[in-house]
Length: 198
Ligand SMILES: [Zn+2]
Image (cartoon, rainbow, N blue to C red; front, side, top):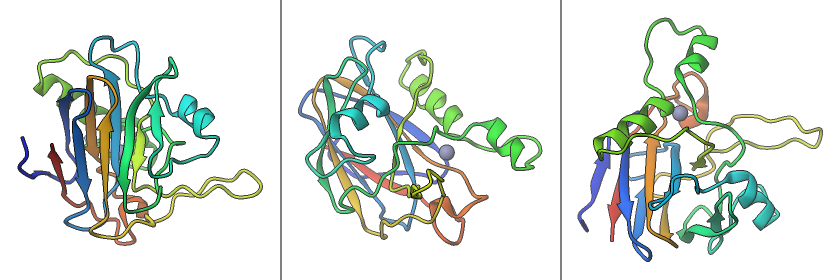
């Protein structure tokens, strides 16, 4: 599939990638955080681990050329290109329904946890236990006293990343539906995202 597809804002999708396959994720429709999970296609017990990756980079976020590593410290997905220079979050877990209820939302609200499950089931895969994604284009500054903040992305509309699979993987992305803080941009609006496998 070389054609560009649009991931509607607030929804998720899963993809299979062979070693060397690339996925471009592009902010073609405005600012938007995209949670991205990667799993070894042959063994979901091995997955892209943010804590192991931070230990590998010795930074909170990857620089262009860096690879996300697994819980077994193997490279799984590399940042072949990154027009943001690494403006991504690796600290916060993805949103789930309880998070919205904690913010006072009543009833159902779309969330990245359900998007992870739905995306995998659409590929015919029974989801493994969810784990910490990399939150592409998300900005979570760390204060000198250890305080975390959620602020609007430093990324700009038109920014993109190209991720290269370093092993056969199943990747899942979620255009985060969070609309209660300026996580997806100062207007708290959720936008579509374009992606392309090549
Ligand atoms: Zn989310």
